[in-house]
Amino acid sequence: MPSSIILTCVILYSVFLFGVTWYTSRGATNEHYYVGNRSSKWYLVAYGMIGASLSGVTFISVPGAVGTGNFGYFQLVLGYLVGYVVIAYILLPVYYRLNLTSIYTYLQQRFGNYSYKTGALFFIISRVVGASFRVYVVVNVLQYFIFDNYNIPFYATVAVFLALILLYTYQGGVKTIVYTDTLQTTFMLLSVVLSVIFIMNKLNLNISGVYDKITHSQYNQIFFTDWRLKSFFPKQFFGGMFIAIAMTGLDQEMMQKNISCKNLRESQQNVLTFSFILLIVNIIFLVLGALLYIYAADQSVPLLLDAKMKVVADNVFPSIALQFLGTASAVFFTIGIISAAYPSADGALTALTSVFCIDFLGLRDNPTKTENQKTKIRYLVHITFAAILLIVIIIFKLINNDSVINNLFTWAGYTYGPLLGLYAFGLFTKKQLHDMFVPIVCVLSPFICFFLNKYSETLFNGYKFGFDLIIWNGLITFIGLLIISRRKVE
Image 1 (cartoon, rainbow, N blue to C red):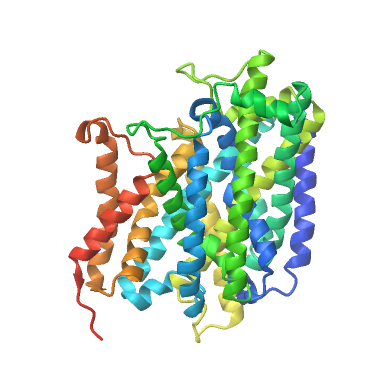
Image 2 (spheres, helix red, strand yellow):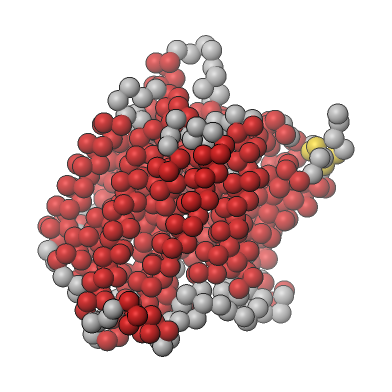
């Protein structure tokens, strides 16, 4: 398919998105920016969170990962369900009871200022890295199939992409994102469902034929029982559970949308509805992945190989959708990947700006500054974080040598682990902390985990850490906090 048609799809979709943004951000204030004035419809938040949670990483990497991991990713998804129940019935009641705007002010009320700043800082690091991974995978595809043909450098593509996101989020914040995420989720889901249908038509399969084809293929394994593998079921299941708790329940970007609902009951409805829809959507992505590899083998489609002669998993879906399934497939894939890409950064920029303005600058409740002054500072912080994302994405382009979804969850294990330990200690013990030592514990824990992960096969008789790394990181943080704890003073 000509790159000019793909580029036209990108431009038209972006113009349409800006129209929605203009309509929803009219009259938005700082309070609309931070929490949507606590008036968001729970069903819109639940539906829109699908796109925000899946992002371009799921859209590209999950189907590609089926080639080596089969349906093993589904073990992780089952763990998500339990994690979302924990969020709905343990974390959300705390956030609503304390009427939080930034969820990290819980740490200030529970332990003190050092813990508060440490939690907020770890979120900033986590979200910058996570958003960079998510944006990278999408922009890299667009670069390869479109912008390389026009000799446009990668950094320029990323800069334009982030500038567009900057323009449509700087005013409306959460108020706008609730609606744009709903729109983008619709287009993304439409794209992946149509991709499945296009491949079914190419292979002359109906739904029962798809089931038979996959169950008799080499990609049909779901549960893995070898304890040494990264895909071992307990590692994946409990890793998924705690990844959901940390990357959703302890993440300001995701919770910022949840606490924008009118009340706790609606917010809980949102999380539980979202979790079951997410289960179904991930099954569709895994089915798509198996069909892509089956189609490639059936039609002798040449797949891109890396220097080690291994299939580049993140290129499987885009290359087949754009080059072998026809014009309609290419158009819907392009719309889908853009729809998956924008939520990767728009919510991140809004949440990063909110956390920095509230938790580090104390801007929201500062009586010495006018609303105008607060808005100008917020704009400056918003632009600064966009620039930071640009730098990190370019760095990642230089060093990436793995499936992005593997990188994303590995980094999440290091950066969200201390948050998991802090909140667990606050919620499940009555002890207080020597607050000034909390940053030391939270910094040491990821370094200990990095060492254990690097030498795990030698130290633990062939055991390899998988997505369970976040659990061990949280546990080490928890033990460190016990060491610096003191009896609670009533």
